[in-house]
Length: 300
Image (cartoon, helix red, strand yellow):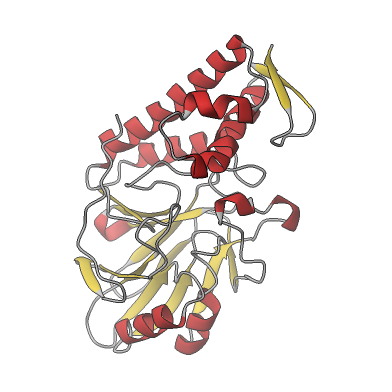
């Protein structure tokens, strides 16, 4: 069982000091895929005049913009980092950067034809464009902080996590979340890439993981291993459904997610599809048709 963490103290728009070098302000955009809302992180010293960075400014919301500007008013923002271009993470980056004089850093946005499915309310911000394109491995420094960009595709093809070296902490975006498993939705989401990225994060042995949604994971080792085991168990269940004669993701969902609210079955179908595509890539299954929800699969 994954040891989910869902309880934490927060208030919308409030600046909370959550670690010596990290503050958080949460946007009021709760939902089935955002939990309590988007948590924007402010990295750096709370000292007046300090040079700081901001991670995932969030959705285009004036009240959240105002709260962020108040939260950083006594300091200088040098960099705005965006983990990926989904609309609950990226749209406020440009307005916030323009108001603070910062530069925006992120991986290159995905091609339009691979944007995430609207069924998840996680479409990409089509207008997003970073000032500096990250590819992974870049190291950026400020007053007493060092952030390393770690390419973590899977949830999104352009997903980037950021390691705070001084605290051995990872700002994981949506790659790892404490309150739920991460959605991997084709065509932009890719389960094979996700599992490889998860293994890379596990190997780093971080002390804390700060997801963009929800509370931190303060004991990441067991949590991440359980996260990984859950994915492998789900993959085995998908193989069992193929063996039982199911051919499409839609056929499998009622049997694999019988206790999940049916309003979430479209998202579950995409997750199953991601597993099926991975099985094809692994040579375990074959596919008839395009890699979408109409495709039919069978064991090789």
